Structure formats: C-alpha cells, structure tokens
Length: 127
Figure 1 (cartoon, rainbow, N blue to C red):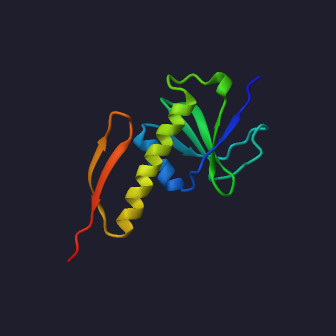
Figure 2: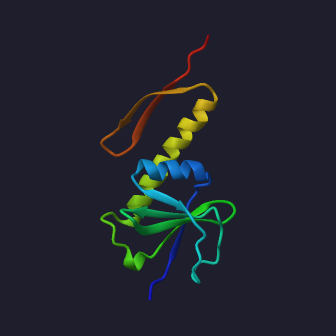
Figure 3: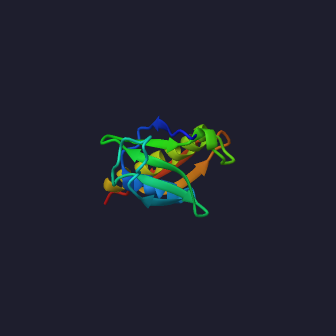
C-alpha cells in the first residue's frame, strides 16, 4: 500500500511555482487532489507530470505549498531532496526577477557556478 508523504516548503506564489516547474521541464495541471491520505482538497493544488505520467503534487494549505509524493514508489533518477532543492532554487530566482522588475531592474546576466549556485546580475538605469 502506498503512502503520500508531505514535505513542507516556503513556496507561496502559485504563478511563480508554475513558471518554475515549466523552467524545469515539468507539466503542471491545476487539479483537486482527492485522496483519502490527503485531507486538503483545494483548487490551488498542482499535479506535476513528465512524459504524461503523474510524478508528484504540490498541495496548498492556505499559507504555503507542500510537496506530496509517494516516497516508497519514487522512481525518478534524482532523490526527492535534490529535486526539491532545484525547485526552491529556481523558484527563488524567478521570485527575485519578478520582484526586481517591479522596481525597474532588468536581468543582465545569469551564471551557474560550479557549486550549483546562481550568480545573478541585475541593473536599473536612471533617467
């Protein structure tokens, strides 16, 4: 019997999360999760697919998203912890770009360093 594990995150913005997952080559489907192991049935939930198969989900609890996955049946070629790190890193990057654009900053350069961190250069021209 499978069991869904719920991993808490600090992700709060659905649109940025959807863009992040698209950047990482996943397909997001807005869907109510209706599972007896999942007590939250909410239209803000996202089912994540790749190659037409459901892989995991993000469940909204009213404040933030949690990653829902059956860790016993996890069959991706990357550990879920590393995948979650990649998602959170890309989500943070997308959040910075969106928020900095509100104040007139533009993305000038992005460089991924050897340790996997991202170096981002933004600038704003004053007139």
